[in-house]
Length: 315
Ligand code: TXA
Ligand code: MG
Image (tube, rainbow, N blue to C red; front, side, top):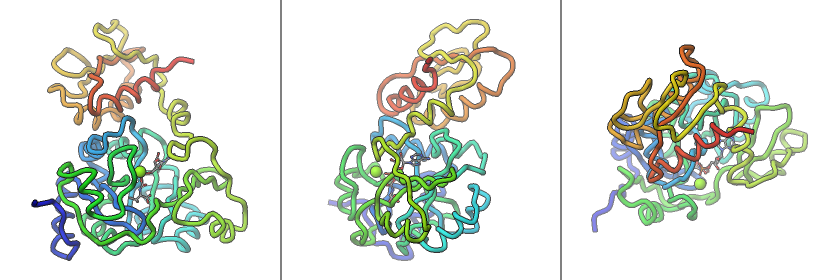
């Protein structure tokens, strides 16, 4: 059987980088697990990640970078961030930071949050791929949602098959569990996910206790945060077929509307536009309220509906 698995030599890394630049998906090895990578600035490519994984909601994704200096324009850095990066990067430690880069193309990768999640992996293939691509590579683990993370190229193929344009085979991952995630946006350091960097090692280095976020480690406080931060400030109704005159109408499919998530009814395109269109709708001043057309509840529609249900939620 022919597969899309290729040995991660220079030639194939270069090809993989071209795929990333063109908006395709590449699975690649990191020291923790294999990642399913896309260009962070290409919302359509980011939407295909959620589609390929069958993720029912838009989780924020980790941006993988290869150069610390780049981070200074991407996220808010301070002495603590710099010190942690110097000690633990490249390696299995991920930072949640305040987002600086306001490029709306980033909205989907950040799941509409005002934070950005970043790590520098230590696998040479990952680093080379990021450098050759010239952009941060956003990557969740390269497996179907709710299944075990892949630590070999074969695992990726078993789980995602030809939903990936290319799988770079760099052998088995040495760490084998996902990166540790810490939230550095507040005064205290908060652990959001235990992983490849030990908590004790972090605390020794910081000289202080790391707080542990309670709740599901895979969805750490993000649903709540999303509700608070990203509900538009305008009243927002969903599943609306006929908008009121004072409603700014976000459509889907062939229809009259103020902004169309996808005139041709493509859920991937709709997902790619969702967060920036909600932002636009919230910034406009011609209408007092916002309404959105029904979105089919299949494929990426599940994630879109999950997100807009939260955004339209009324206390
Ligand atoms: O080792 C790893 O971290 C692997 C490799 C590929 O780098 N990546 C990985 O990504 O495990 P993913 O998407 O499978 O897991 C990232 C987790 C998600 O559960 C997400 O909800 C959470 O991190 N997360 C990311 N940004 C967040 C944020 N700003 N606030 C709260 N949770 C966040
Ligand atoms: Mg995962």
